[in-house]
Image (cartoon, rainbow, N blue to C red; front, side):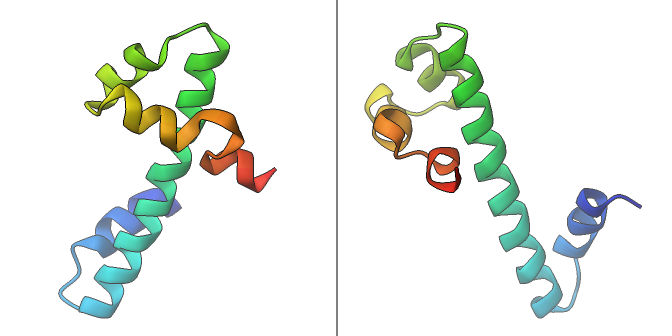
Length: 77
């Protein structure tokens, strides 16, 4: 089973310690995937408004989170 499938399975565990650790790991994964796709969209010329629409957040929220090198991937580089 893949790591992601195992995390998804663990997230439904009856053991709260297992479930909560899996939820945290999934949250980190989702944050990284979002940052990657925002960066991809910006490189392809998408506006902040277009990205915000797809993420169902405000333009200001997505801009604040990712503009100016403050996004998740930018900090890790």
